[in-house]
Length: 299
Image (cartoon, rainbow, N blue to C red; front, side):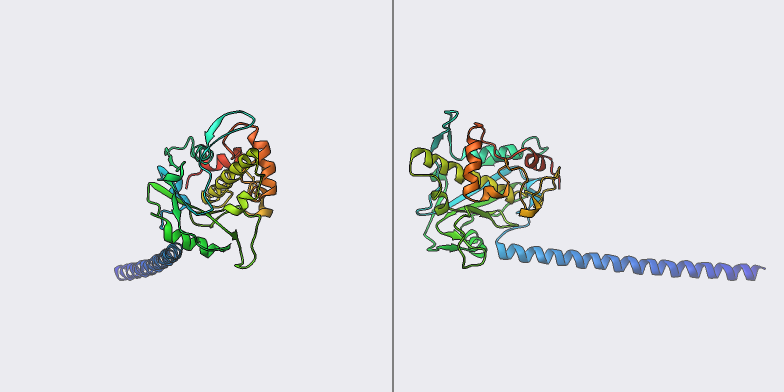
């Protein structure tokens, strides 16, 4: 009987060792797979950063978790100088600096979040950088990335999001040959890079004082729109708190009164949008759905 019991005990021990061995082998296989997958993801991130001149901190997750300062660097070509003076709203008679529009929208975007974010946005030309003429009539995505890699002074850090805005002469082209004379500005997806095409800005409005004011709003609203994309709108990295993506038109808002509405990226519809917006007397161009997305997002 003792021999039988001993034999059975030996079998149980053997089975236990066998199962343990198989379990360890499976765990090692899974761990090895995870290491390889993480290594591949890290390699892909490093390759993208090298190609774009960015860092791992140039990311949506950083902007909405550890960023405490939102910094905007502005460069401009000669003859593509951004508006930087004060202007008066013709409906409210209030006078503000042009760049208060972008600043107020960025402040509103990060309002009521757990981590307080300070904005650092240049408001006069002396705080911006004039660059040599790039001698381009057509700008591609690659051209804009290369410009940023040349003139951007610093990448983002764990606590500072560094965004790069370039005012350039010429027009945007998605295919490298066809100029789009209706595109006022673009954000290069996955980067903090924005380009504003000054010739398109100046083609809006008229040469009268009211026309100049219209161009001021066109320029700033485009900046707000493209900064919205760079900050993950709409469903472009930031999770939506409600269903408001106009999927037929990509990463844009379905609310026609919001600056993130797709047509507000072009000239004709944007002027109509601005005529209604200016009368409100408010600098904030984001509407409730987009504001909720940014204010409540937690990576």
